[in-house]
Figure 1 (tube, rainbow, N blue to C red):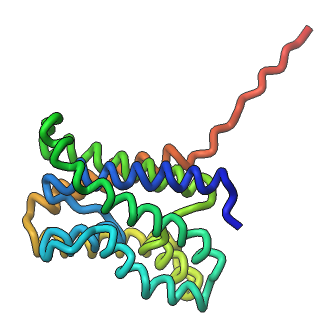
Figure 2: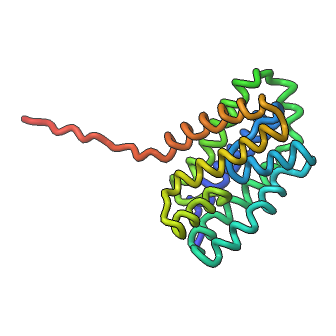
Figure 3: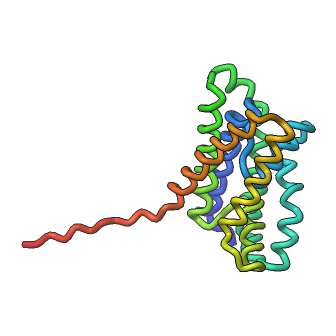
Length: 202
């Protein structure tokens, strides 16, 4: 059952994703990892809406999850639906943002990655996610018994490299910046902060 807290976190995380993608990555044709990266490639090359492409790209992964780990599927479904919706909803606002704010490709890539990483990290911290290739990596790790991080690295590397070949070398380099910033933001958001209790001696 979806709690009110998890719903609120999923909404906030999805909005951060949508902001990072539409306002920072798309203007300079920058990629991210996972299903988002696949959807961005489809948008840059064929003009397919990013949110719709995310849904279509995730269908095979959700079918796989249905057979191997339904708990992961249900925890990711709401995040995928909301993030896809907000990404396409905010797309028309991109023009107004770019009119008011001027950024360099590097800073835009870093900020975009940071927003996306924060959105994903906030959701992960409260047990939600958007599924995508991270979920695929999780399922493959259970089947093949290899560390999930290795699968995530391989999948993201293939997607960004493919995007660099199909679009431009600049896209590849800026995407590395975006993924690095996103990884840092996700790590910070999911870090378990420990409270240090001070003991007072009389």
